[in-house]
Amino acid sequence: MDTPPRRTGRPLSFDRNAALQQAMLTFWHHGYETTSVAELTAAMGISAPSLYAAFGDKKQLFLQAVRLYAGDPADVERAIAGAPTSFHAARALMTGAATTYTGEATPKGCLLASATASGSAAAADVQDAVAALRRGIEACLRVRIERDIQEGVLPPGSQAAPLAGLVLAVTQGMSVLAREGASRASLLAVVEAALRAWPGSKAEDARRGDGTAANAAEHSA
Amino acid sequence: MDTPPRRTGRPLSFDRNAALQQAMLTFWHHGYETTSVAELTAAMGISAPSLYAAFGDKKQLFLQAVRLYAGDPADVERAIAGAPTSFHAARALMTGAATTYTGEATPKGCLLASATASGSAAAADVQDAVAALRRGIEACLRVRIERDIQEGVLPPGSQAAPLAGLVLAVTQGMSVLAREGASRASLLAVVEAALRAWPGSKAEDARRGDGTAANAAEHSA
DNA sequence: CCCATTTCATAGTGCGCGTTATGGAAGTCT
DNA sequence: AGACTTCCATAACGCGCACTATGAAATGGG
Image (cartoon, rainbow over all chains, first blue to last red; front, side, top):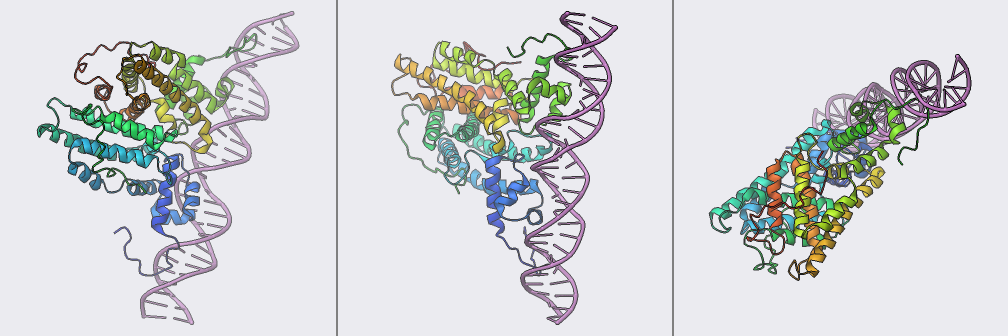
């Protein structure tokens, strides 16, 4: 699909997926505009013409790296829709983010947050693509919260949009804290603090700690 | 102090403060590394040699713009220390941020969050300077929360560090939402949702809405 | 074995970057 | 007025950027 049958000619001398993985890590570390093609070719272990032949240009390479980073959006949406409650979905999203942002073998923070926080007008379409991913998660979570309200899981009068926005804001904000060196434990504590804002979740579930459906938000390798 | 007495010679043909203001807005809009000196000189209405004579180089200009943006750190710390409670301080910080991030006459989001989320190794000291500002606010807020715990304003067992981290995370995360076009009202709703996480603040103060000591966090022009 | 096809390595393209050298214009001081 | 100091405008510096032209090397098909 991506690679129509290559019938003849010299075979590729590098692992395309491994190279894309290295590109993803490089973008994750430095951001989109502040990563140079020279840095990419060095990390990927290939030359510039090979990069352009295999991935298009820098922008298309970044978009493919984003897809590798974020995984299939349908997976995240299924995880949100299939969680026992929106509370569990929110906890899974945020703990997954906190865990991903503080991985030992990966850069700190969030590739999406780091890559597009700043940006010149030339990279507007890149920002749009990343923003679409975020909006998708936010919309899916908001729908899940609304369902809980209608089904009586959450008290009536609970506001779905601000809660979904809170989860997204905490998620993106934790990227900044992680980048400054915050530990995984401290971020997970921030997540638990944020979850106290969930309607009907004050002292009664303060020390529940089940973690159902955790780690469905973002990949971890 | 900044400008030792200039006794003779041709006077400056531009308003130094106005030029710095324009530089700040340009950095605010595009970030640090993704703003070129050509963009800066165009926005400031001066030529490159004038910029270098008046402000040093791009890095020093950015740091001066950050000081103009953030104001005197002592003001923020006084506002936090002088707030009636840490809850009021947190609300003031977050509502101030939400308001600043959605100003009509200013770029969307936070200059500090936008400028340093991405960054090559060459700009590490710039990131450190911005991170120091954030850490200062976080530490000051954490101390304020600890005071409330000791004085019995917050229930014992309340955890200061995660609460301070939550406020910082929400603040930085709102910058991302604002940059994607979130309205001021929606961000203020996120702030109110986040404040429900404050210990001892569930339904009893849901519709208080005093806003004491609001708007002390960040400047607004 | 030769050809068609694809990839590889080297080298280089034009361009925009941050920064500065130069010479003249606009002031103040005596 | 003239010396001196400071600033402005033009033009250019070297460098790194994203990207590519060129030709040789490595494969499969006939």
